[in-house]
Image (cartoon, rainbow, N blue to C red; front, side, top):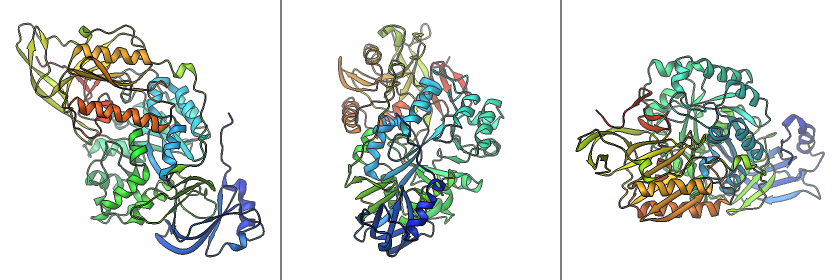
Length: 598
């Protein structure tokens, strides 16, 4: 299938001039709307937008002189005309959907541009996986730009991935038509310490004139942070408090504040704008990770903008943070992010700037959604078999693979336990007394067992540890091949037999998420593409995901969006404690620590 390379402004300049001058008819005219100008932060009533070749020719009080016999008229009827919304940092795979199905899910919510980092699939399939995501992205009727993943593995020496991304891979991808920059540089110690591989990836991006994404997941804002900024990352989405946002903006970075399915970091950081009065041009709204249920039931970037407004942000400022600020950061302000001449004709019609109902969505001059219903096709790639057979655990697992032996003669132990923090990515490093029975360490006091099952090289390896915070009760287990970022298999449970059943089930279906309770499968979300994504419609995937979350609740879990917490338990670049296929990792020191204290 031919990739959709949208014509550039210079390609169509003569046509734009002819329409704007009235010497040729527009293809589309949006008539009688309130022009929301994000350059000047104004609302200007009674304006028209004339469009040709998918781009805006002019925005004027009366574009009747641009109307010809074949011009399509879209009546704004006095509604606000706002730019299509941009997500400045996100991972399509976190939606459990392919780029096509993710686009289908978010278009009715007014998202017309996404800056995506496919580092999830990079860990499973390497550069070939990135290329597949990139190619399907370019087929879509909206703007899906790809950041080349930077860190696979995210922390070298701390985990083993299916593939590794090299500096040469980054250099190669910079020449692809849809690559907009380098994905989040998660190996922040590597950058701060001058690691040659990390610096080579950054240099290849900068020499290509593209943006380096950041990820500084440490509370240390001293010399290590200064060194990281000096290394070149231009933004960061890992802030969780007001000072995080302020510090990043003061250093010339863009503070990306996120509202995803489980990350609620807008309210605590937007006060840098709403209360401290800092310049809002250096703050960007994003989602980072949204699963299909959030997309179908709650929204996408429209949800984030509404939330920012609810947190006290001026609606026009919030819109800037989701449009022109994002475009400017990535060097795209001459292409997207505003309703001005030459830009792609990405327009939302809405009757209210605070509640932001998405009543009509126009992308590249074409109506793509009306009142929540999509009106265009989102083309798919033919995903190869190599992308669908990626779960290889090497053997049929048994309950004994999940046993944690205690020191000889011990009747209790002190365990290092991963503590889940609701609505945040960081975890806590806990020390908990656990009982011993028949020589094996037991779950107790809200502590469950967690296992990391190697699934790329069929080694049969299983690493066992403990986790707290899910509140599971009875006999159960939950397994997922979505395990950021190495994407082995994470199994959390209260019973070894159920853990084995859940892990073996995912090997059988080729990946996904499953929950076993009282000896039976309570929920299953099949994710056959790389063990990360379904190629089914978002509504189907969301329905199965809701069954999964209900099954988690039935097992006693009350955490908000606990699935996202589950999927990040192997993310060895976010403090404090994580599990990998090599052991239990203290991310504060980037050292392995024992599960059981001696």
